[in-house]
Image (cartoon, rainbow, N blue to C red; front, side):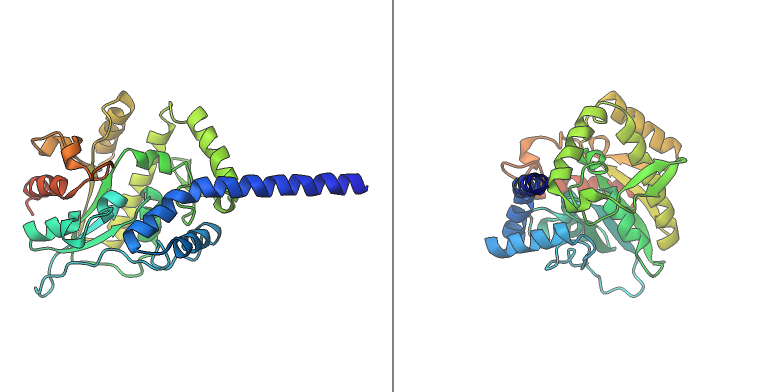
Length: 299
């Protein structure tokens, strides 16, 4: 009996060490990002990351406990029209000052009030979560723009941000997975990641799931923003058959899709439109995209 308990003890020690190692790998990007964007010490960044990962329901402004969304840009116009932006770090403006972001340039080129709900590491999971938790209808919003980038399909399966519930396709809709051990384990994250790349990444399953999310998001937009048009702005999607088929199908579903490549006269994926040593859009990218988008939508 003692031997059995001893073996169980050793197994628990092994799992703890493996979990600690996996969490270190998993958490490093978050720690680095908090230090860079929010000027936190390494210790504070680590503590915030631990709280976010192991306490996923402590949302506090949806993202990090000590941060907020970008400040809205409000014009001094009574009952002014509004644009709400949703997406990931592209929308939020990773490493960009407030005057060089998507919402900043959109405010310069239009008379709209601009609200930026972009979250680093975000995906349609986060967008659906935020929309479903808005308490009031907003009748002044005329456009809700979701900026898509190819990683979003992966994030629907991989637990980059464990604070938001997972959904699966069920009867052509989404079903919430109430119990998910991956929320609380970095080790499970890597197991999940392995399964994802082995069984999903080379199929069309993730495209179908993303389309289902977009349908649900469009329903929420109609509910929470009754007078708004929902736009999916596609940023540098890879020209493969699955992606092309996905956006063709989205249009058939009544989802308005605008591909950045179709409205700008440059290759926005060139290095000059990216933050140095990174893939995120820089100010020059938004300087090119925003006027073209404003013209396309007659803003």
